[in-house]
Length: 318
Image (tube, rainbow, N blue to C red; front, top):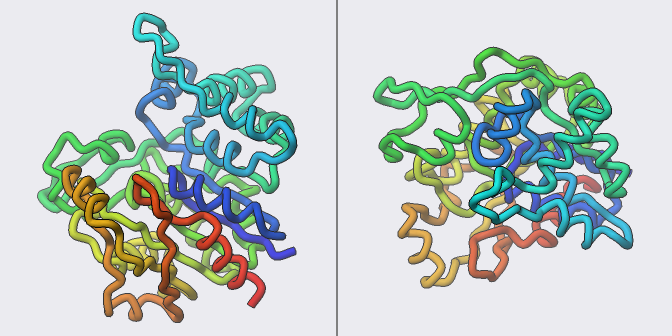
């Protein structure tokens, strides 16, 4: 069975993992542990645990078995009681925090949750070190914290010139091994500087990526994001990922070329988000470009989980 390691986070990763588990693949999902907003940020500040948000999504995406749908609903449940201390907390985040406390650490908590959810695959943190994402904008301003990059309080038109972790973080040993032994490494889709790049910034990641004989596959985002990839084309995104991954070229880049409905595009334009174009410069950064209809017709812009996973499964078997 081919080993596929997916690196990144966010809703894009959730959707991709849901598709990948339909195929006979040995899946490992690697997630950033540097979130700082929402329920995740509160738990991080109050309990001193590493942020569980992206890990929770990965666990839910790969959950399998007869009770999977009920457990997914439970893990995704968010309390909505404004006068309560639990308001806006995800049950899944609280559950992972409890398991981490009971069993003596985040990794032990993840393992116990994986057993409960009967995972089809494995979920790993990119690091167990406590760190925060920093970004330097083109005007020299330094932004501190994933949530301040994700939801900019600054001028989102300013490009990010550099991202780094402070203090530095080291790649988790089991994650390092998974990357080195992989047959396929998939990076993306996901928010570039708040989800994908942080996983590539840990010490040891570039060494593991370069040492791995895996086919490196980058899945381009469908939309730009204000404050992170404003004005980006597909080649801009791929170039940044390669630079932080320490790679000269990707083996494959998957880029959607299916036009979206005008109504959907107009809705995203209100948030200053626009479809990412598969541009001519993309060939500079990859050996193979896979284009096609990878868009799921819905009221939000997201990849079709089955279509994108099918392409990756075919790459793995090639």
